[in-house]
Length: 283
Ligand code: UDP
Image (cartoon, rainbow, N blue to C red; front, side, top):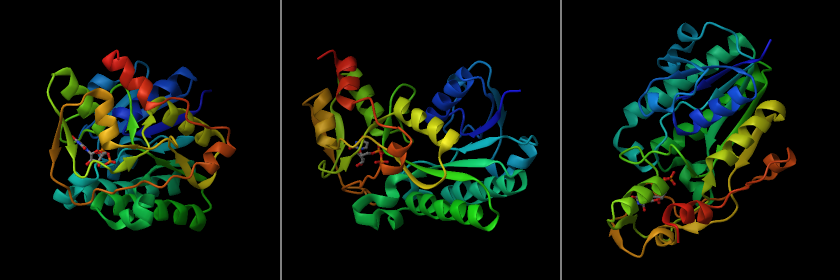
């Protein structure tokens, strides 16, 4: 019998890559997605897709999995300032539903935490509804693990890019730049442009999730490429035609990365952003 894995957010950018890899390794995979940003275009053959809110996970997934990968949360930083009610519903009510499901099923939980917890020397953890809910959920998960003696591992993603990344209102910068470049237009850089990020290829993230799922325990599995770039540097990899946009509340200036625990499992980032952009521009 193959192991049963539930992936919340399985129809999303990162979740779909994880589902693909799990299927390739012969796991039975159920995705639970609310299709807020997830898409049916991301569906992977052989995965069973269920539509619904994570707060209702017990109703949608009555099975008992071996592992839950909880990736299905509201995931934009600056945008979260405009809609705290939605962030609360998806990340607080939703994740509490997943925690309760986990407590009753007694399986392993792998939580997709956010590296915003460590940005700007720790200040960015409280700077937006997104960062704060994600950071408090890491406490919820580690406390549930301790209170109820449940196996878990908490990962922290750093600016993930790659195929199936989104642009638009809920998009991320590399794909936004890729599409602006493809249209021949200027690239929109949010001021000051000197803010730094650790861009990490989605294949490296999935490799880390697999290792942590198999043999990781506890908090602090940072999954990020150590190489930092400013947003202006990233824009310039595509083009020199740039339009500066005004500053945005909640926009951290620096990340803050620690991958020690992931490396102890044999993980390291194998892909670089420059090679990805070069494949796009042919330069
Ligand atoms: N950003 C930008 N231009 C855009 C979209 C985003 O300069 O059109 C900036 C954004 O302000 C942030 C960085 O790029 O400083 C990374 O943003 P993203 O939303 O990709 O990820 P975040 O670091 O916020 O999780």
